[in-house]
Figure 1 (cartoon, rainbow, N blue to C red):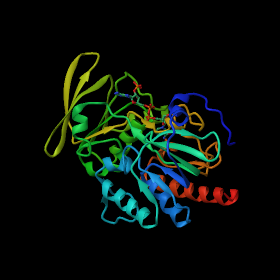
Figure 2 (figure 1 turned 30 degrees about the vertical axis):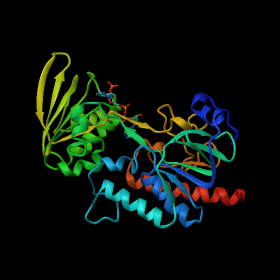
Figure 3 (figure 1 turned 135 degrees about the vertical axis):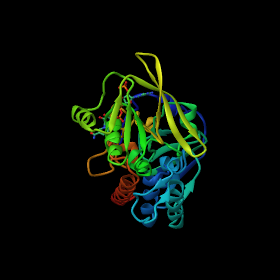
Figure 4 (figure 1 turned 180 degrees about the vertical axis):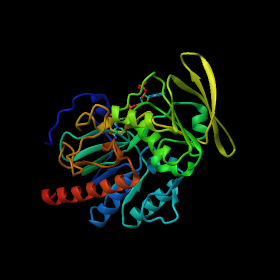
Length: 332
Ligand code: NDP
């Protein structure tokens, strides 16, 4: 289905219609520079598709906010998130990917060739589009949280939990992610405080039961985070408020895990691309294909479940292979 009428936010595409912007034509355009985008670029380059990749708002993606990455195969001694993304970028560039700074500011996927505007300044027309824009972890918005990001504050227990082995940590959130992260951390850490703002958990019944039955998880219902405490070595504690009693309490922790949800970065594509109610792009199971042929999605923008660097990289590979076959079949 290629001819889709925009359903809403035509405003975001007015720039295309109003201004005379320079136009460049490419075969494969990749938006996003996390493990999904770079892997798609590596495969598309090796298939002689001369991909152009725009890095987006956060070059390197979410992994650049992580310190050590211990679970990506191929790094026996582990690697830092930024260094791993630099490696992926170098590999894609060595194989011929054209990697550029720039943010996709609007899109027109109503017909071939698909059009994506970069920085409101230039239109890229493409035969195949690979959306690898990722998702953004939501944070509480505290200054101290920003200060200790990567130094005790994390949004991914699977990525960073290992570094808090035998220590006390806290997880904030009451959904399935928070329950899952608390359970995961309980297997590594001495004690896990689960900080929940409501008097109940929103997580599924099964996850709630698991949390409640785990002896080293203490659920602090009706508590909010006032401040994350720390020193030059990172997080040392958290200051909480008991909402019903108005009391402040301090817990000694070294890791603070935020698990209050993610926001997929799919807004500019939503007029054409089908998403779920949160905004995750729907792909045909087992493929990277979206509801528009020639438009593919990979990585966290289409994955609310696994959200790992390695699964994102795998789906980036799928997107490049799907794009190659699409172009081959259409014989542009
Ligand atoms: P959810 O939106 O389900 O839950 C977010 C949680 O964070 C809620 O408890 C919410 O509180 C809390 N929260 C939000 N903002 C704040 C804040 N500022 N301060 C404190 N707490 C806050 O997100 P999840 O990531 O947990 O889940 C997303 C989706 O993915 C869900 O559909 C979930 O079921 C699914 N999922 C499924 C899994 C599985 O099946 N194994 C694993 C992980 C996720 P409140 O309740 O008060 O709004």
